[in-house]
Amino acid sequence: MPGPQTNSHDCAVLGIETSCDETAAAVVTSGREVLANIVLSQLDDHRPYGGVVPEIAARAHVEQLDGIIARAMAEAGLDFTELDAIAATAGPGLVGGVMVGLVTAKAIAAAARRPLIAVNHLEGHALSARLVAEVEFPFLCLLLSGGHCQLLVALGVGRYRRLGGTIDDAVGEAFDKTAKLLGLGYPGGPALERAAAEGRACYDLPRPMLGRENCDFSFSGLKTAVRHLVEGLGAGAPDGLSPGQVADVAASFQAAVSDVLADRTARAIEVLLREHGGGTLVVAGGVAANAAIRGRLEQVAAQHGIAMVAPPPALCTDNGAMIAWAGVERLALGLCDPLDVAARARWPLDAAAVS
Ligand code: KG4
Ligand code: ZN
Image (tube, rainbow, N blue to C red):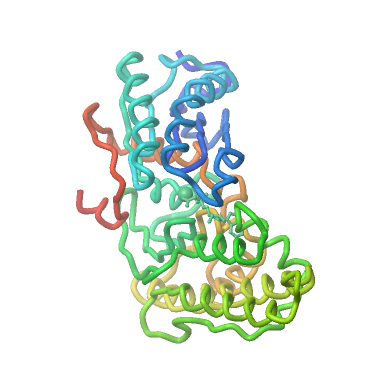
């Protein structure tokens, strides 16, 4: 029997996300209803270390996940046997945390006799746009997260063609490291965006890979240039940079990143238009929560005559709803997994097409 809040023809899927420092569970229907979406951030656990500590993350997932799932199920008004499937991130990510979520999903699936769906976290980000809007395949996906920065053509569920990616740091990593350098604390991305809003992009920073024929990115040179800039500015000041200088460096960094993302994405849109004659630009992952970057990419899409879709910020950063939705999409195609499916620290999205 369907639960009280779902239509009788809708499927309901529980999604579990534990691949990094968010313990998350959500229930989503095939009718695009998010019945519950609970995200518990472990920020306070990791803040003293200035970054995510894998062992602390895994232990926190063990302690919190059961309670988060119970809250999500209560909010959705369903019990486990009313679900149509259980989806969990099976990789890529910090493998200790991934195992916690995947093992929990297996236990629920076995007890409730429901199918298990092992979701690639990156596919969760990529498909999240289809949870919030009518986005047809093929679409171009710019994936901007803490561990990944890639441009892919999404041809269908489980079918991705990688056009390019970062040759060194991921874009979120560049935000986090630059924020740390500027003393903006952890997590760096949102703090840097707030600081940048108060500053002017008045410092000249490099735009790595601009104008290249391919669709690759590079951010480590930009990070080094910011470090040299900060060392130069701070040299004469006993207390380091003034708040105004911090804001200006943040704004200059964000402008350089925006220019690089705009240029690389424009190149990829040209490939999309040439090979598929049209499509949508989807921007996903934690850095897609950045309003300045979203605005800039919207302009690029408009210049090429295509639409851009980015999920609302709460669905850009890691969450269970995107995993549940990927589960809905895979369930519709009968793409379920055996109970002995393994957690994977590495799992390239374009290899998912092969497997
Ligand atoms: O997708 P996500 O939540 O986790 C991963 O799968 O990595 O992305 C996290 C990354 C972090 O590097 C974080 O600093 C960055 O996304 N981020 C942002 C913003 N919000 C989160 N970067 C720039 N501006 C933001 N507003
Ligand atoms: Zn993510």
